Amino acid sequence: MIRYIRPIRPNEATGMLTPIYEQIKMDFGRVVEPFLLHSPIPELLAGVWMTCRETELVGVVPRTLKEVIATAISAKNMCPYCVDAHTIMLQAGGTKDLSNAIVKGKYNKFDEEKTRAVLEWLQDRSKPKPFSVQEAPEIIGTAVYFHYINRISNVLLGKTPLPTNSRLLKGTMLNVANRMFASAVKRSKTIGDSLHFLPEADLPRDLAWAKGSKNVEGAFSRFAAAVEDAGKMSLTPEIRFEVNKRINAAFTGKWNAELVDFEDQALNSTAELAFLTAVSSRTINDKVILAFRHHYPKDIQLLGVLSWGSFAAARKLGEQIAG
Image (cartoon, rainbow, N blue to C red):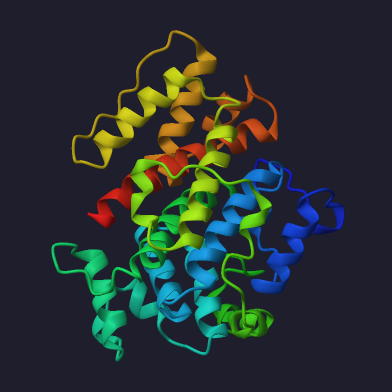
């Protein structure tokens, strides 16, 4: 269930949404809610899709390792929807019983040495990177993508992509769901095939870790431009500057929850929503959304702030991960 906004579903799609949805169905298996929720801004959906595809679905790093990273980051960010979603994808790829070990941090359960080493490195980055320079853009990019998608999913999605959260039925539902995605997971895909959906853009300096992989660099540079354009609908340059300062403080241990009082309710509601999305997405409730909606009633305005706040946090965390 998608909350707070009305998505444009595949049977309603027009313009650039139509070919994007077609490629998602072909390469991912289904237009799932984390993609669908971005549909009110087609350029944003294009950026989200290509970032997912060019980091997680194709490349030199095995898909299973990237699904493990996705599950670990989602567990860290307490995004139950994404944990269930990537449990499904791990099973669809033929790897079972890993998600519980990931969620519980029991990495000794992993027989594959590199997978265990990457998971341990994500927890303790003082250790040497257990992957090559060539692999780095995909591994770091997958982590950054999920730091983004976890935050926006925590605000706009429910607790699971499954029809029920009942423990008694969940195992059966997971088995059914994994069969829906299995053929797409195993289908051969061409690197870079999604990049034509958006024009080329410059890679921001804080995403420099994406260099070394043309498709990852191309996806993140385009996505960053799409997020900036979406955020401008509701976020003034002053708000973006002030919120970014607080996000940087929050992720460097200099916590300061106090935002500047702009002496304007509309600006204050926007700053609060962007900041909470970045640093505490699970705490956003109806009250926070309604305070923003009072001044900015359009879905594209809400989506713009949520995407900007989510990506601002993901970018900062990506810098830390890349070292």
